[in-house]
Amino acid sequence: MQDLLDPWKNPVTYAIPFFLLSIAIELAALKWLDHDDNTTLGNRPPTGYHAPDARASLLMGLGSIGSLTLLKVMGFFGYLALYEHVAPVHLDTDAWWYWPAVILTLDFFYYWQHRFVHRVNIGWAAHQAHHSSEYMNFGTALRQKWNPWFELLFWVPLPLLGFAPWSLYVAFGINLIYQFFVHTELIDRLPRPVEWVFNTPSHHRVHHGSDPEYLDKNYAGILIVWDRLFGSFQPERQRPTYGLTKPVGTYNVIKLQYGDYGQIVRNVRAARSWRERLGYLFGPPGWAPPERADLPRPPGPALPSAPSGAPSGG
Image 1 (tube, rainbow, N blue to C red):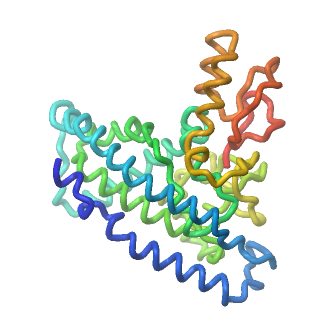
Image 2 (cartoon, helix red, strand yellow):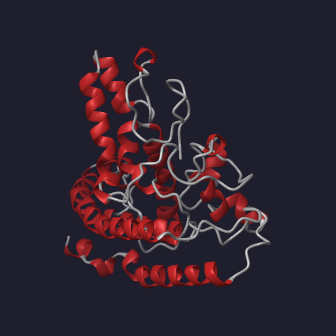
């Protein structure tokens, strides 16, 4: 347990200096490089950095350190019990194939966890904080949620498959490190084989877009093949409009993290039946019964004019 909580056992800890260096390099590139030849984004310059927005992203990243530690503590004992007493096999962590297998398997379940938080309102209430920035840069990658409770549930199959619980956190750290580097506008499309297999900056710009054609697309962590297989892939056709479909208009990190929960509570209290209450909790973001379309909706990814059950994303 002590090893689990040791920050130096977490690969993200070692990556922090590289994150900061990458932000500095990106800032310099935004200032000094000519971007007129960027074929994906057109002749407009990248969105760059905005100081209040970047400050909010940094504070949210720092706050997420504590929440991720709590997540480890909450999940570890449950995963260990499943691994020790339920799993039919224990995979050999020293085998050459073990780490590719655990990284690949976790990435698969990450895809479904990520899809869940975009399509289920109670999950989106936590995840929308990451999408609230109208800028696409390495700083936005640090804009992490503080309440990742749902991730615990989506990792349950891994210890049952025989993966050692401690290795899940290492694999998840590797996944997060990879995703940091796809939050940028300075990299255009990569060679076609790379774009076909891996999540790239081009694919992830689509994911952060609030344009109708980009909503609920490209949930990938490392491999974009999951999106291709399960029907959520969208190539980058034009420069995305970043952020939520209804901007929150604040840099207050508490409101960014928890504002949607207040709206859900108000809507649930105003609901006239259990069906409506469940809809506000587990329906898609922006859900409301047709006859209650006048109710305020959280600044989720669904277009304000979208009918009940329409796709959402962001």
